[in-house]
Image (cartoon, rainbow over all chains, first blue to last red; front, side, top):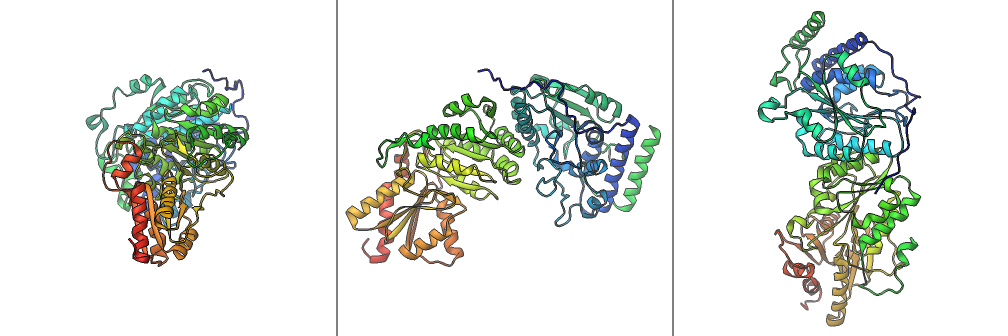
Length: 299
Length: 330
């Protein structure tokens, strides 16, 4: 059976939502600001923050929210907006702060209320409590099916936006990810883009030691996806990868595998299994901020 | 509406009709008025062909991927659509349970889950019987839970569900040959309200799904052979439960038999018990008939009901036992 439902998009790229013009240096500054604000929150909050996976994905969040996505903090329901599904829900605070930097939320309010009773800003994001969040997530492996459904809606209604999701590499051990990978390819959802934070760490182990994901890009290719491999901490390379995404009316979903370092930017957290999640006392906070600043000087 | 009811040219209790056909026709009909109605299935779509062929842009068969199917439905609902997921309940209610809970119920999205193989039906063995689904579904926040025997009722409930803001679970038995219980138009069908399928003053038999027609047969036997006047209530909505009706039946009949094609603990009998305990109502007699804690094995549905103690004979015996508590004539 042939489906003659598709409306040719032509030049109907989103027009009403403009993206901010930013240089690579501007974006690097935004990524630094995001990491710094993450650490300050981690110092303020008494409970554990998933700081390792926040820091590994900070450049990806910056790319998406400060550069790539057509989103409008003043118009949350604009139908032409790009959608973002945070599949690795434990990086919620990184998303909140990235969105705050873009103008969605107030950073001070996030710091003041994070994880506290009746706060909208919880460990995993809830769309009901926090408008601006597209979907409620937290349990791993749910984001790609959700994003697939949203992309299906866009595609079959001839809409020109994209649906982005961010997964951790560890979470792609969930079978539901591969179910959705099949479904997205089978439905020709070129408007779906999955970023993967390939930090090569699960909560308690290094991925290739306990779970062999390699040959990882080949797995996605075998599912029929368009694969882009990129250094997830090289802002210039990330921008280049974003700019090379196929048009949203193409047929092939794209996965952008971002090679990253868990805990990136703070020397004592990098590739350290102890820093999947944690909190920072005053002394450690100062050490962390100093390490972050040193890294910037070195670069 | 006419498309489904016009099939019935004359009504006889127990006429067989396919719920799956009714669903297929109803969805096709509803798809016309609701251009945001989608139908999704994990490879169980034979009777959805009409919808698929009429609205190919709103039909998705994901193949054998229940978790993705429910997640995709949630994504569609988040974009303002009304997705209906159709499949086999043992898999939708268990393999995709977390997607149902976290992707649909948590954000309270209007996804309908409609499926077959609720209870010991279809002779597929225990992998293919949904016997704990009502316990699972009634425990989910925001979920409305129904179990339907009469094929024409399925169409009506689907129609009513178009205005619902949250998720809905519709449980069917096999769905190929179902007994028509109600003459079209003879009863008021409203989600959340039980249906008094037969009036009676000596006891109330509560049932849902296919056991409603069994309860009605039992009531006829009780009247003809034992002079007992049994009320039969079709509690097709298990959540929210019709408390008022339960309390009224308690006051007016004082004795309950609950019979269901589900584990005896965790289904309707448990829902009713909760109401009675919470309201401090003490009955003069209560029996629950359902599946014991066993993996039930193979056999036809009536054979399995008899084997596991909730068939027609067991229903009559249970009614006599609770009535005996009234008059001592058991």
